[in-house]
Length: 209
Image (tube, rainbow, N blue to C red; front, side):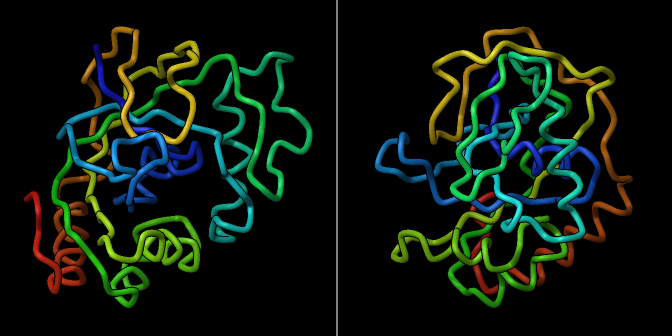
């Protein structure tokens, strides 16, 4: 079965548009030991609607939150009113659209909040929220994962199953999905950004490159 990495729907949109190049992970409460592990080097991007909040996304990308909600297929046809609540709790759509997949280009373990802040041009969350991800479980470093993202020729709509829900990172998707499409950035653009990300994270040892 195809493997997918769960990320906020707004983050998946940003990755698929080339506005975000990396993800920051510590682990989900339903993962073994609550620790994140890079279990796969190629996977689809599954848009989740858990915990998305307006104040955790950089102001320049807040309009994308509404567009991200439209990526779901909702029971009543439209996203529910007040879908983005203060605590991030919303109802789940019946179906979601898979529109991109990614390869792990490099990964770093980071403990320095200055590095997380310096990487802010490459993610759409607020720097404060990114640092919050770093501070959770302080004794463990933050995974900074550089992704080479590819946009599917046509989005694929899949049904949301109960086993897809909850705070977990990896999903077995019960639907055939193609590893097809074109990279969202040219080779030159991506290599230039990758070099800068490596420079910023150079104080931390790469765990995959």
